[in-house]
Length: 300
Image (cartoon, helix red, strand yellow):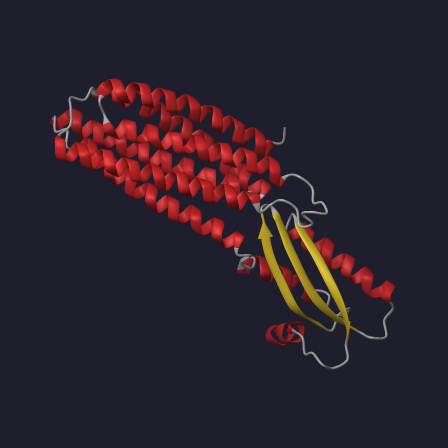
C-alpha cells in the first residue's frame, strides 16, 4: 500500500469513528450544532471514499485506452467532495432555520462538547500529515481532503465556542446560529474545492513559477538551441504534461540534438517531479524568432 493510499485509508477510518461519536452524542445532548458537524462528517465519509478510490485509480499506469494516464480521476474526486459539502451545508441550513423558528430544546453542553474536542485533535493531526503527503505526491485528491479536514477544525472550534456561550449564558439561540455559520463556511469550502477541480479538468497551464522554471532550463542551453515556441503545459493528478517546439541549427546531426533534448527533459523532470516532456525539433530556417532570444535580451 502506497503512502497516499495509506493516509487516505486512515483518514477514512477516523472519519467513521468521529461520525458515530458525534451522531450519538449530538442526539443525546440535543445540540443541532453537534448534529450539523456529524452531518459534515458524513460528507467527509463520502469525500474520503472518493479520494481513496481516485488515488488508487490515478496510480494506474497509462495504457492504450488512456495514453495520458488516469490522473484526471482526482479532479472528479475533488468535484465529488465539493458536491457533498454543499449538500451537507444545505441540510444544516434547513435544520438550523427550523430550530430558530420552532425554538431549541434543552442542551446538555458537557456531553455535546466531548465529541467536538476529540474531533479537533484528530483533524489537526490528520490534516498535517495529509497536507505533507499531498505536497510530496502532488495529489489534488489528498490536497482537497486536507483542506476539508482543516475546515473541520474551524467548524469544531466554532461549535465549541457556541456551546460554551450556551453553557455560560443559558441562551440556546446560539446553537442554531453557530450551525448556520458552519453552513456558510461549508458553502465557501465547496466553491474552493470545485474551483480547484475545474482548473485541472479545463487543462489550465502550469502556474507561473513552474513555467519560469522551464524557461530557465531552456535558457541555460542557449549554446545548443536557437529558440523555442508553442510551449504548452497542463496537469493531470500528480503528472505534469509539457510539450514544446525547439529550434536548432539545421546543420547539426539528429544524434546531437537528440542528446540536448534528453538533457532538457531530464532537468525539467528533476525540477518538476512527475513531468512528462515531449519535444518537437525544428531546423532554424529564419521563420521564427523564438522566446529564447527575447529572454536572453531581457537578461542582458
